[in-house]
Length: 232
Length: 321
Image (tube, rainbow over all chains, first blue to last red; front, side):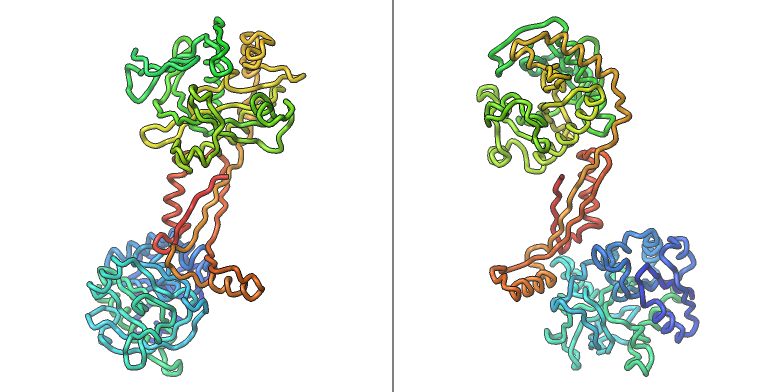
């Protein structure tokens, strides 16, 4: 299954993603530089938009990348129902593109946060979190603009339709204020679109893909992602 | 044809073929001092019509939207029908006329940069000078509309002054009127001729209505001279004027702004303790190589929503140069 890993100028997590995906049987990832244009995504069964600082976070994190020509290809893949996973800067790009609602604002602390967090997975079925329903998982975050914000209407929709896939929580799985690392509304760490095939998340699953890294919870998400490319 | 409006020197008719257009006829009348001094000169209507047509076609080529559509037989222009703003926009490069009387400045004094003045278009009140604040207070136009008209007046000034310089004429000052069409486009309207501008030849000799105001020369001769000289210009050699648009982005009220907060703390630490709150945003300075039009501003608004601002969390404002 061919998985396109997008690389914009300033993306710096594409190698981590490639390495993590290489652990998953039959995943066939390839790096697509954004300059190659939407045609380069024709063969893709799924897309990962990795973290980093696309275009140096100029303008707003993800804003410049969100209007690049290659995003036409991303939209096509998303519309075709194939899985699209945006991690960290990739999540920011997906909201700037309008494929996911809301925006990622500066962390409330004004600091860059880089640490492990616990996350409560949504209890309703979701192709990215298959087998992890209602679980408490552990993934690292590293961002300055991860404070998820959206309009009241969008929040009602996200909640009503069970589109909030993961929320920051404490070790016991309670999404309380003290475990919110960036001020995100309702402790939101990741959301999916209406079809459920586009996921944006601030935590880095690729950095929790081997025991030596401290957790393998992320590998399960990536494994689900690869599996979803096959079933489509 | 139905007469829609009679001005001091022009008459406006409804275009029988199209309700969205009007036919403007230039008469031979000439007036000064808000109509106190009046006369009529054969050919004067034809000349002001010719000169207006010349300037408006030229400005249109340079990208400034005007009301002019075509020339008709006689001293008549077919124009887009617009709602005229009751504001006269005056641009001055060199002090002359009422500016000198008002401020006691010697006529011929060069101003450091082009000065834009607004006048309330109302004969009963003798077209008084009006401040932008007063114009907004009595709702003559919106702030965006006034800023747009002022910006356009600066462009028109550049294009007219450069063209006149080619034929060794100095643009002293001029008056513009603007109108808004049913789609909301602001167009340069009315006329641009010796009646609405001051133009000085070598030795500061007027080629404009001052000859009539001061009874110091033959208006018809001067207007013919102006028109003939204009025909010798090379409009294509005038380079586009660089225009600037500034877009400011600020976080919406109620949205936390950590960059502003840390800046505030730093200001306080440096002793600037009066800083109670700081909001940090960004400014984009966008330069264009053509005059700003209503269409360009509409496109810009789309760019603001799509790219320059995040409408969920940020508010924006646009300022013209």
